[in-house]
Structure formats: C-alpha cells, structure tokens
Image (cartoon, rainbow, N blue to C red; front, side, top):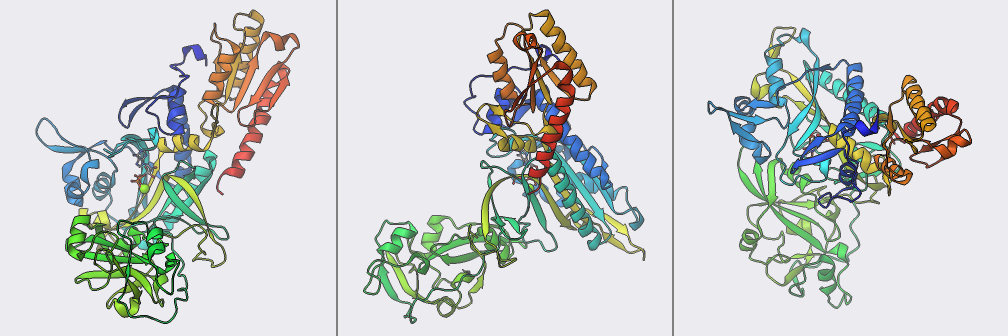
Length: 594
Ligand code: ATP
Ligand code: MG
C-alpha cells in the first residue's frame, strides 16, 4: 500500500496529555486520536493491529468450540434490575433514557444480556455445555480514564460466557479457556503470566488474570522463582513468620511515650526508648492497627480491626474476604478518632467494644509488641495478642513481599513484577443464572440453575500493552503477529525512475509472497525524515531502496528490533524477508509464555 494514500499524520513532539509510552507512541504514530477523555478514534494502522489480535483470539477460541455472537451495546435496565446490578453497579454504568422514558445503559459487560439469551433458548441438559463470545466496544465511565487505550472509557473487549449442567463441567471449561488464553498471548509474542487473582468472598468462584509484564503496569505480581505459583499481590499468600525473641512477657500496660506528631512507623519505633531499648524498638516488634467499616451480604454493618507487624502492610482484600464482607472501607478518620478516643497513630486493638479483631498470623505466639494505647501520644508495650485480645483470630492478612518464602512449594521465594491485566477468566457459579432464572432440565427432569463461567480479554488494552513491552527510544517495536504492516519499504529517491521501478516491483513481489507492505513513496522528504517515521511506526522489517545502493546493485534490509542491516540484490529480497520472518517468529516463541 502507498503511504501517501494512508490516513496518517505522524507527530514529532510528544503530546502533552499523553502519560504512558504506548499512548505517546500511538498518538505520535498517528494510530489514535482522542475525541474525549478515554474515548478514541482508531486510524487504519491501529485498526490493522486490533483486527489481527482479534483474529488470533477468534481462531484460538474456535478451536475450543466457542461460538461468536454479537449482543447489543445498548441494554435495557430491566435485565440489570433482575440481576440486582442496576442498584449496585455505581457510576461506571452510563445510564440514559430513550424517547419513551425507558431506562437503558451502555454495556460495560454482558452477563445480563447473555444470560437472558440463553435462558430463552436452552431448555435441556442435552444442549449444554454452551460457550459463546463476542468482540465489541464496551463503555465504562471510569472515574479516571488514563494511559490512552489502557484505561479508556470506550474500549474493545472480547467477552465470552459459558453455561454448564454441572460444576465439574464448568471447571473443565474454565481450564480449557485458561489454556486457550495461554495460546492467545503466546501467539501474540509478548511476555505474560497467568496470575491467581482475588474473586471476592463468593464461595465456589475462582479466577485468574492474564498479565502482560511491563514496568508501567498498574498491578503488582509476585511469582515464585522455583514453582509456577504466580499471583496478584492482593491475593498472594504470605508465609507465617516465626515471632522474634522479645524476652519474657511484660504486662500490657507498660506505657511508652511516642513523640507527638511522628506518624511514620519507623520514626515512631525509633522514638520508643526505654532502659531495655535505648536505641528504640525494633520495627518488627511494633504493630500497626487499621479500623474498617464492613458491609455484609445481608446489609448488616460492622467494625473490623486489623493488626499487622510494624514492618508489614495490611492487605485489605484479605481482611475483607476473611470476614466475608461484600464491601469494606477504612473507617473515616474523624469517626475512628471519636470511636477510639485517640488521634491517628495512637489507636490500637485493645479494649475496643463491638469490633471484630483480626491479627496477622505472624504475630501468633509472640509477646511484647507495641500498639497504640487508644490514648493520644501513648503506646502500650507488652501486647500479647493471645492474652490481651480476647475473641481475636489469627489469619493471613498482610501483603506478601518480594523475598518471602513461597507458601506453595516451600522452596522458592517470591519475585516481584509489574503487570498489565489484559484478560481474566472467572468461574461465576450460579450468581446470574439463579437471580435471572437461567435454568435447564437435568436427566431426571429436575429444573436447576446453569453453572456459568465468564472470560474477558481487553483487546485494545492488549495492543497498547504490547507496545508498553516493546519499544525503544525511536519508537514502537511491533511483535510480528500484530504489526500493522510487516515490511516498511522506503523509496529514498522517489524522483528517480529506476529506483521507483525497483521499489514498486519489490512491493508487488513481497505482497505476492504474502507479506504486508507499506510503501513510503512520498516525494519531497529526506531519507532521514523517512527513517524517523519508519522507526516510530516500528514495523518489524525495513527495506530501503535508493539510487546510491542501486548503483552497486543492492537494496538494504533492516531489522527494527536488532537494528541489523544487510545488503541484498533485489532478487534476493523475498527469500531474505521470508528468512527474517522465520527468525523473528522463533525468537517470539521463546519470549511467549515465560
Ligand atoms: P481493571 O481492574 O483494570 O479495571 P476489570 O478487572 O474491571 O479491569 P474486567 O471486567 O475483567 O476488567 O474486563 C475484562 C478485560 O477488559 C480486562 O482484563 C481488561 O483487559 C479490559 N478492560 C477493563 N477495563 C478497561 C478499560 N477501562 N480500558 C481498557 N480495557 C479495559
Ligand atoms: Mg478483571
């Protein structure tokens, strides 16, 4: 294709409001334009990549018998009222009324619609299992749309849903989709990890996220260096640490003055001096306390207090799941101060009424911890959680850290990565089928709710994530499978008749051989300007045809990633590009997966 005819405008300068690399490069490469916060137009180059990725997704899902459908983007409120989500979904759901005053929303996801489709179509166990998917624009009115296509408001998603007659069959499909996702991201040619993730406190449900590894990722992931255990840090199991030797147990009420106004745990620990600890308290012997306000499934509310070692961080997701809350937030500071009678920094778990206290397991068996005394400027020194916190339970509620011993294999240690969540597989169970009456008749003629799974891939986010992982100072470095074009053919002297003849002939030969070629035949541009654009657009191979080279009978082929340059005779180009492709695909296969 001729570059002069392409709807494309590259930018020299990085746009001011672009805050991550993929967004900067996609805007500079003329792939996307912002229409409003989190809402973008896709230009031909972007759409080519998106379509290629979609094709990979389709092919791999169809191998597992998934069927493609297309549901409406506009969804009636009634369905969401049936599932109960009209009330609970919050402001991310864009709601509006039609001319007859009926309420609708723009679909952020399609559990309600698909469940309605299936309940009206499937009657018998003989029609199950069923797995359907669609690729479609979703709308979520994100509070902070940012990072270009990575967190948009309108974005393209593949969402799939499966329906089963038994729990075991749903599990089987879950793992089939898990494997399909591994194939999809491996084919894409990016470094990724399947990651165990939090599924909330609903029994019978579990989930994995798929993350593209990139320094700019919003999620922290811990991965064992000896076994396969990889998880989102909000879920990673923390090993139980042995309590330190803190000497013989004191009484709780040995009060310690802590310098007022010092809130950091380290400084506070250092300020807690006595005859035995002239240099202050070891931070692992201090404790931190957090007060949460939890809402349970039956809408009752309660206060939850969490205690962790001073050198650890509390994991609110673990606390929330442990108490089985559907919603949990830090108790607002003014209310917490009124409730405990102490300023922030001096609150503690001792003596609080009507608070469920959970103590991190690494304090179990330990004595002489410090804790806030619920009296401003005072700490207790002598906390023995088992003795002083009647009714408290010990559990894993801290955030696991890099270097912690792996809880699964016991041999390795956690390594930290940053990841971009590009996909998720989720076993839903009967959450939607029960509330919406999506039932089937089993072999005995008994009516039962179908067991469901759901499976999402952020298509546009994945394309952006591939760039986050594959770029250099000059521009994008596309993985071959989703490069908008594979060969960038640069005519360095478009005025020269001979040069143009060779260039057009090479374009035709390469296309004939099945390669996608963007031919930069634009006139009036220096070779330097063409090189800059080609680096920015980042197609895997660049073929340069100029009068200087042709005098010696050669053209030049350059690998975008390795920058390796070879001189060839024009008749060698197709073979050389074919060999380069094979080499690049082999190196991708190595990178894919682990
Ligand atoms: P996040 O935690 O990043 O907000 P999510 O877990 O709410 O995402 P899912 O409901 O699991 O998202 O949606 C499936 C996939 O859609 C995600 O794995 C992600 O790749 C993509 N996705 C979700 N929200 C966005 C968004 N605002 N912009 C682009 N892609 C998104
Ligand atoms: Mg998700």
